[in-house]
Image (cartoon, rainbow, N blue to C red; front, side, top):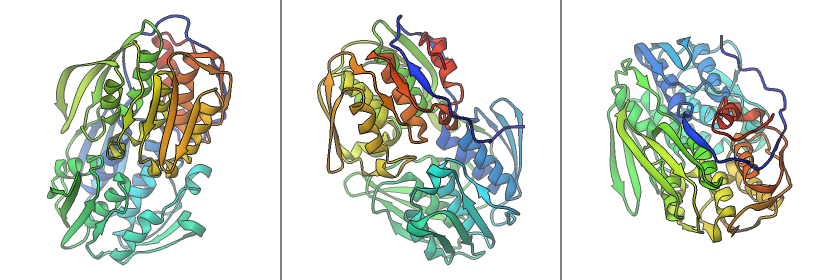
Length: 449
């Protein structure tokens, strides 16, 4: 049976790679799609088979939560799962508190499901998740008729009094957030009538794609300069459909970045999800001069997929517009590491969303770079990185703040720093990328935990 026990602390000292990185690897399944596959399968009638599921701690929390809500969720082989759903509107009240661990995605999306079912539930999480804001989700969801009680500032633990006959929602996102959008749409699934969400900038659309995959009626129309209006017809007959989860582009980012930075390297990552609302990093890397090659393009489970090869070479600074942020919001820490090695300055605009991730990821990324000799500033919601045009000084201790992406970014930084980089804890990497260190060593990283 899968484990969701809290991992023990695992510090790591990273030394510069002594040889080029080389090889072809596959990264774990996409975390965003894995969460949604389990949730939607539990809401659908019948038996759904899921292949390529990410078996990190975050997704295992979602599996446990759906099991607690009455779905039959079974792991049949590595990455292969079976879910027998109960059908929309028929979830059972959980017997105990739902512990979502470190996963903000799971907690926020599940809020939409719990709000729109006539039951009482309580969600909590680890120390990091209990410090993250939930009001951005609970405020719009309150319009369904559901009631929420939380700690000050809208923080977990969160008690939810759901409603069996929720009102449909019409909501305009104040800032681009796929999690808030998805929570509203999931609440609208069990509401009679039409739920409407306006987003000022297009965010990742895995929820819309997968809702259609399971039989829901979802339409998308353009709104202004880059925005969209998503309309969902409530109470569809969701029917089980198998799901193939592609490789997570956010996980592939760390492998590809390392290959771009370690001199002489060439590494291929197979089967990466290439949803255009998730590939802002790849666009940005190419603007920086990266040799990033795409091959074997195909469509699997309604999502575009392909193989990406990164070849090391010189990079230069870049100015990334704010409107690109939603398509790469999880990749800014590793992009900042790449920018630190590029020649010239880089500016990343509109990063307010980074302040409410697993940590205040903006300040944590700044600290990661500053402690390793990189000049970096924050102006408003913009981050400015002054590249060295080569190896950064390194030699610092990185406080990961229970944030898996910071831990992996620091690890990549250490592979190309002049002095060893100390990472205070790599245990939380398993929340999104189980086997990260082993995979990196398989291409020559030489990491010793």
